[in-house]
Length: 589
Ligand code: ARG
Image (cartoon, rainbow, N blue to C red; front, side):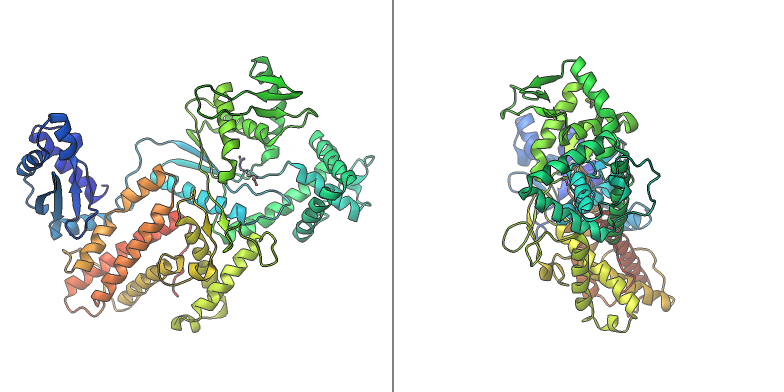
C-alpha cells in the first residue's frame, strides 16, 4: 500500500505522462511548508531542463491533465513550478481506513529479500559489559528489528570477545589467589570440576586487578601472555578454566541484555573461528595474498586509487600470535560459508572504522568475501558525560551496564511515583513499570541522535515526560491504551474512519500515513533515529488530537467510533515503531 505520497506519486506520474513528459518526474513528497499545502511535487523543474521548456508551463500542463476529483482538494502552482497539493478529507480518511485494515500498517515487504547478518554487542568475556557496549547492543538490536520488518532474514550475532589477552590475565590473576586449583596443575589429567571456580563478582574483580598489575609488573605480564598462548594452543586445564569464565560471563550478559529487551540469535565468539585460521592463512600464503613484512605476516590492502594510503592488515605477529583482524577475517570466511549473507553489518564504535576498512579490503581482495556479500561498518559515536568525555561513574570508573540499568530504573521509579494513578499500584507493578520506563528513557536517548554522533548522558533530560524522550512517547501510548480500555468497559466499539473534523485530526491522519517511508529510510540508512523522530511527532499529533476532542463523551456514535478506530491505529503504529526501536510499552501507568 505504501504512503499517501506513494499513491499521489502514481497519479502525478500518470499526469506527467499524459502531458507528454517522463513519468519519473511525478515524485510527490510530504510538503516542507505544511502551512501552504500537505504534499508537493517539484518534478516540473527537472522536466524543464530535459524538455527545455518553462517549468511553470510544464506544471500547468500537468495539473491540467489531472482528473481525480475524489483525491485532490486543491492543486496549485507555486514559485518557479512547484505543484502544491491539498487532499480531500474523505480521501485521507479512506487511506487511514486501509492502514487500519492492514496487518503491516501500510508497509510493504521489500521485493529484494536478502539475508543480513548483524554483528553487534561485541562484549568481552570477563571484562564487565560497560556503556561502550551499550550503544552497540541498543543500535544493533534496532537495526535487526528494522531489517526483519522490511522483510529480510536477519541474524544477530553477539560476537563475543572471548579469545584475547584478557583470558591470560584472569588465568594468572586466579592462579595468585587459588594456586591449589587443579586447572593450574600441568600434570593433572582431569576430569575438571563442573562447578565454576569463580562467580561473576570474582571475574569483575579479577580482570581490573590483573590488568592494573600487568602495567607495572613485567613478570606478571609475561606470565599472562604465556598463559594466553598456552590456552590458545589447547592446554586442557586452561581450556577448562576458560570455558568456566565464558559460561559465567555469558550467563551474566544474557541477564543484562534481557533487561534491555535485546536478544541475539547467535552466541558465537572470536574463539569459534580460531580453528579455521591455520587453513585460511595457508591458503592466503599459497595464493600469494599473505606476505612477510618485517617478520610479520600481512595482507597488503593499499590501493593507489584511494585517496588515503592504508597500512597492511596484520595476520600474524613475529611470535606467531594472531590478531583481532585475523579473527575478523576468519569470521567472515565462516559466515560466508555458513550463511551466504547478502550483507554483514557491523554495529561497532566509530573508533574501529580503520580496522574495518582494512578487514573489508582484505576480504574482497582475497575472495574471503565474494562481491555479492556487502560488508558494512555501521559505526556509532560515544556516550559522553557532561564533561564531554566518555561517560564514567562518579568515582571515575567505567560504569557497568547493570549499574546503569539500576540507575535509570531508580530514576524512573521516582518519576513515575509522581503520576497519581501509579501510586495505587502494588510494588511489583511499580518496579516493572519503572524498569520499562527507565530502559525506554535510556534507549530512546541513545537512538534519537544519528548513530554516528556523540551524545551527552543526561538522565534528568532523558527521563522527562516532556519533549523528545522515551517516557513522553510511552505516556502517549499508554494514554491511548487507557482510552481504548475505558471504551471497551462501556461497550463502545471502533468503526469506520470518517473524514477528519479538525486540523488536529487531519494532521494525525497525515502523520499516520507516513510510517512506510520512515521505515524505508531507517532501513536504507541503518539509522533508527528517523523512527525516534517519527514516534515523537506521532505522539505529539495524537496528544493534540486527544486534547481537541472528547472521544469518550462524544454524543455522535459514528464520530466516536471513528475516533476510537483512529486511536486504535495510532496505538498500533506507535507500538510498531517502539518495537522496531526495541522499546517495550507498559500496559498502564
Ligand atoms: N569485542 C570488541 C570490542 O569490545 C567488539 C567486537 C566487534 N565486532 C567485530 N566483529 N570485530 O571492541
